[in-house]
Length: 183
Image (cartoon, rainbow, N blue to C red; front, side, top):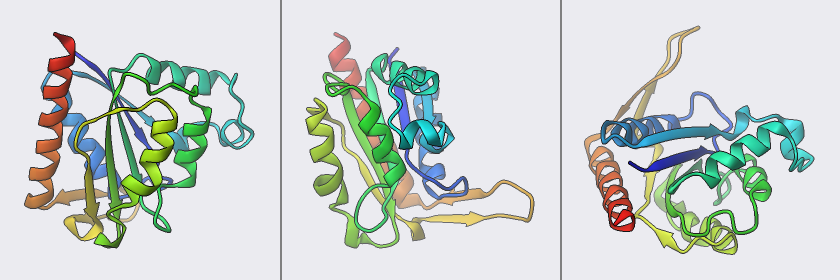
């Protein structure tokens, strides 16, 4: 089976993006793929901000990406683009670190108005890093995920049916692409 990494660029532990990445991770794991998650905000901030390429945490995260057959890049949309914390990590990946990997973007924003943020802000950066092969991504809006949270407890999420279907289609497309490439 394939090695897949999810790079989450959310700076917020209670982000609705987590519902999306958890759903995708669970579905890929159920299909017996190995899934690792890099939550960029958990990497040492000093290493990210000061571009410490040799930091043990950055080296380890880069090795996870290097060993992946597919890379899922997930981010909330802020000011019509992906998060700055995600950009700091992408800047620390090798220049051609995405060459030959299947890329799947998962974005969430407040409105549909930023739907093209994947094409206009993310894909040019990924192309400069060697990304050429994409499986269909998903752009979701906040209203498609209900978040509830009791004091001192982790949030719980409920994804609406339409988004669940689109995420499932994306997972299936990614699995098909991985299957074709493994032959």
